[in-house]
Amino acid sequence: MTDVAEMLAQLPLDLDGDPHGVGFTTGLGLTLLEVGPTKALARAHAGPQHHQEAGIVHGGWHASIVETVGSIAAYIKAAEHGQSVVGVSNYTEFFRPHVEGPVDVEALPVHQGRTQQVWEVRIARPDGKLVARGQLHLQHVDR
Image 1: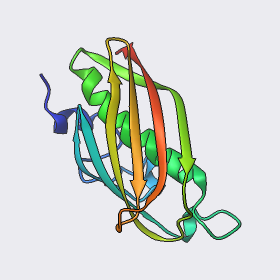
Image 2 (image 1 turned 180 degrees about the horizontal axis):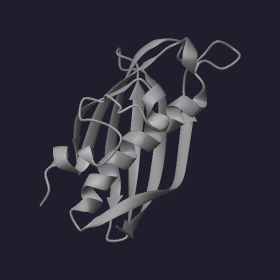
Image 3 (image 1 turned 90 degrees about the vertical axis):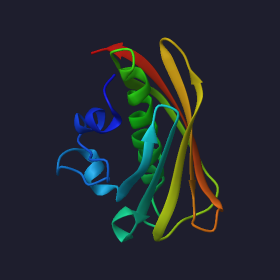
């Protein structure tokens, strides 16, 4: 079995969340704190570059974090069987606005089957108040 660091080295994101300067994830301000086949923890920092017209963080930023953190953890699980994952759906709902600063991200599996996975990803302020929650459905594919 390949270790987590080796699997993540195949992605455009290092274990410490420092992007290689390619792809969509470079602008998220995301740092992975812990990642494995059954849980992922991360921290993201929102700033003015993530704002929509009303001066709050754009919902697409939250949805992108759901997709990124959930996909990385799901990839690690699928890789145990020589597979990868692709997103099928991302449903993200918003509970309160966020303007700037850190949020904590936790991804946990709802279902991990032979051909698909479903993950719940929660995004909360440091005081624990929920900002957004997403459900990510992924399909296993052969590499």
